[in-house]
Amino acid sequence: MFDENYFMQQALREAEQALREGEVPIGAVIVSNNQIIARAHNMTERLHDVTAHAEMQAITAAANTLGGKYLTDCTIYVTVEPCPMCAGAIGWAQLSRLVYGASDPKRGYTLIAPTALHPKTEVTSGLLAEECASMMKDFFQKRR
Image (cartoon, rainbow, N blue to C red):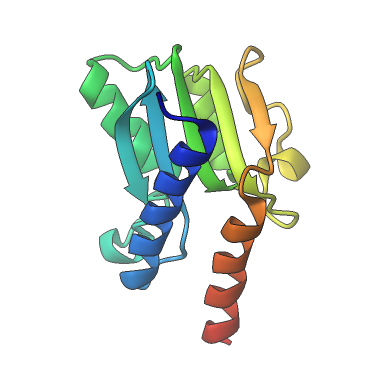
């Protein structure tokens, strides 16, 4: 049986893939019954699509895997706090849990749209936060 750290490490692997592709290094995995059913990373540059965030890609993949739009018994692990758009999608998909690593004090949903999630979604923040945050900091320092 896998633990929370394992799933966040898998999200970090996705973020590393995004980094290799020149994308903002954010990764996500969706878990159902202790199994990863979807994994994704940011693809906004590759797809020329501002909505191609890791969470959006993972939600679409998980819905396709399960054959339905609601992910009520699933947990999404994402390396950085979701933006309001992604939090809204997490809410509409009715994910049971959101677990994220690093906070995003500038664009995170908790600052801009704190009610975007479904009311029953359980949130855990700060899992492997240092690893998640350092990848983002390194990425943006190199771009400046």
